[in-house]
Image 1 (cartoon, rainbow, N blue to C red):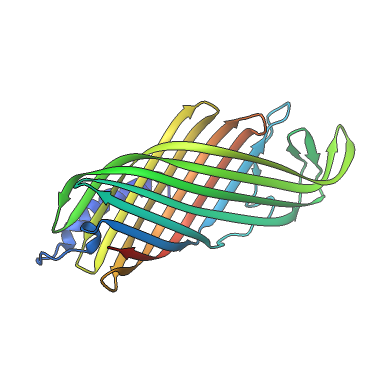
Image 2 (cartoon, rainbow, N blue to C red; image 1 turned 30 degrees about the horizontal axis):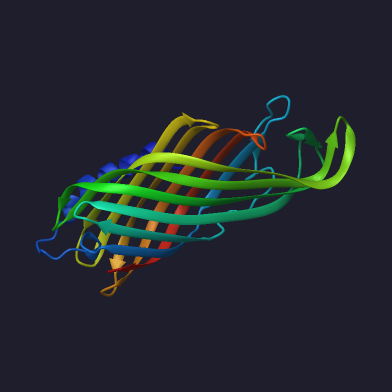
Length: 278
């Protein structure tokens, strides 16, 4: 099942209203609502879909790496998050995660890669790697020290994407031999976002977030969704454990000298983490 980004937004809204059902009578709250620093070390286990297009003289069709090249799914990737709450209302969050996959397949039809052609029936290798860095500045607007934190902000997702295919390439019906063709791009995608935390007890915290972007900036145009809903369990004073279901999707057109084309990328799945707070 593939959740639509609108569903992710509805999850955040529903979590905001559902939180009142879990309000505790005690004044004790989860420490994330009070501590200045949070570090999360985790593993993202996404199911992935990836399509790419490299235009030659005539725009080509998308190459679906998830099917055409038999790219493996559900490979774990490491993630690091750091949050600093400064002042009474402000915070800054930095996050990084990366994924890398490769595979091979027999093409069922010709594939155009720039000026080169990989012929139907040939065996090809393919790979794609992505590095995602996120920087987000936020401000709390509605807070209740006993129960919850709701904030809004703006930030930047910086994506580094590399993709390759190798096999016997043809140019003008002439074989150029077995070789590898590769493209890459750095995509700076600003975004606006919101988060909501609900303290269910001093040990349990409900977390949600949603980042969104849709615009045309210089060489890039497209959209971005980054959403998640999860729970954190505070096992000891400064150590906790988290489980989040994360959805990340970009759909971007690129106009660069080394890559004129399009990419669609979806990462969706569980995120497991150990968290440190003080």
